[in-house]
Length: 310
Ligand code: RIB
Image (cartoon, rainbow, N blue to C red; front, side):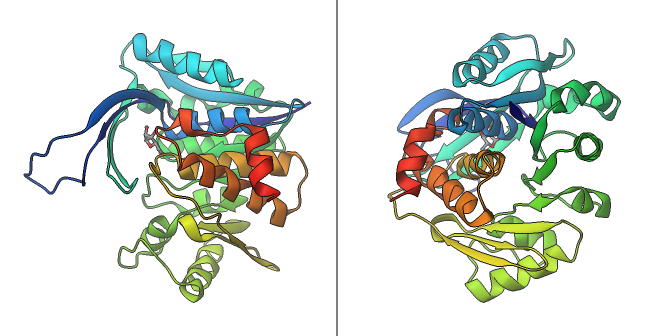
C-alpha cells in the first residue's frame, strides 16, 4: 500500500454563474447559485482519491472551523475515498470559504477568505509526520501559511515523499520553497508572476520553454507549466516533454489545475513514466472542465483511463 498526502486548504465554494465576469463597480445578474466543496488542497485530495487505484491511500492534512461547512467538506472527501483523520478543527476560526463567479465560457474569478486554513501554523508541522507514512507523493499549494508549507515540504522529503508544489494562488516564493519542490507546477499566469514578468494568460511554446528553464534555475527538481487546453510542458535538467491537451468544450475551469496535480500524483504513484503520467493528468483535467464545480468535477479512475487511452 502506498499513499498520497495532501497538505492544504479546505473551502466551501459559493459559486454564481454569470453571463460575463463583472467589472469593478458593476452589478450584474447571475444565473444560478450553489455551495460546492472546494479549496485547492481538498480538491487535490478529492481528485486523487477518485483517480487512485485500490492500492493507494489518499490523506488530507488541513484545518477547518467547527461549523456545518466543515462537516460538509469532510463528508465530501470521505465520500471520494480520502482519509480525513489528519484534518483538525479550530474553535477560533470559521471554515475557509471562496466566492466564485463562473462565466458562460467556463472562466472564473475567485476570492478566498482563508479562515481556518490560516490556523495551520508551522508549530503544527511535526504533528503531520504520521500522515506522510508510506507516502510516495506529497501535494502542496499556497492557501495555507507559507512557512507551514515550507516546513511540511521539508518533512515530506525527510519521510521519503516526492513533493509537488502548485504555486497557487501565486505569491512570491522564498528560495527554500522553490528548492523544496521536486516538481513545481505553475499555470501560465503563475509562471509569469513567479518570474516577475508582465501578467499573461497564454504563452507560445518557445516562451513556455524559456520560462520553464528560468523557473528550473530557481531550484525545483523539475517544472511542469500547465497550459490549459494546450496541455503542459515538462522540463527537468535532461528532458523536455510536451504533452498535448484533449479537445473538450469547457463549462467550468474551476479546479482543473487541482485535478491535474492530483492525477499526476496518482500516475506517478502507479509508477507510470513521466510521459504517460502527464497524459493521464491532462485527461483528468480535460474531463473536469466539462463539469461544474470543484470537487464534483473530478473524474473517476476509469473515466481518466478511457480518455488517456483514446
Ligand atoms: O482551485 C480552485 C479552488 O480555489 C476553489 O475550489 C476555491 O476554493 C479556491 O481555493
